[in-house]
Amino acid sequence: MTFQQPAPQRPGYDPHGFTGLAAPHGGGQGERRKRRLKYGAVALVSLFIGVGIGSSDGSADTGKATAGVKAAPRPTVTITRTAATTDPKPAPTVTKTVTAKPKKTHKSGPAAGFPGEGEYLVGEDIKAGTYKTAGPDGEWGCYWERAKDASGEFRSIIANNNLDGPGRVTLNSGEYFKTNRCQEWKLVG
Image (cartoon, rainbow, N blue to C red):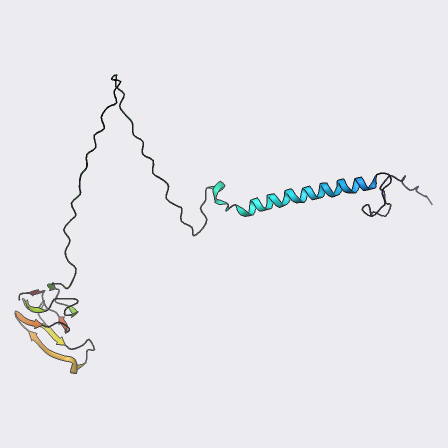
């Protein structure tokens, strides 16, 4: 059997591994204070670094915008150069102002003419008045209908007709006008 000799005792050495609990030899209070200051300083620096990382949005250094966030418009820079002359006086600045004329716009509102296929609300989709059509758009005849509402029921029909040639109809505001297989309707009065 072999016996090992224990390691020599050093100040602050604990053979059981509890170095923090061993009573230091000579100047122990100073060692503890230094150790606490060192660990406290490391913790404080780590805190500042963590706060700095947490407060940055991460997009400034990478050049990537954060998802769902629109980039703000960049300011516009205008550079004006003056032509180099041998004359020490500055050249006059000439500014020409041109006023743009707005394009004429059409008033929005009901149409004065409409295709011969569809259903229209008089006063909203088309203007009230008398309309004329050249007749059927094919060989099957032109059908038109004036109605009180858009229900499509028989009792809502005010008047209707099947045309084999040209025809006219007078429409009042608030009525519904239905047309099938007709040529274009044009406002005539």
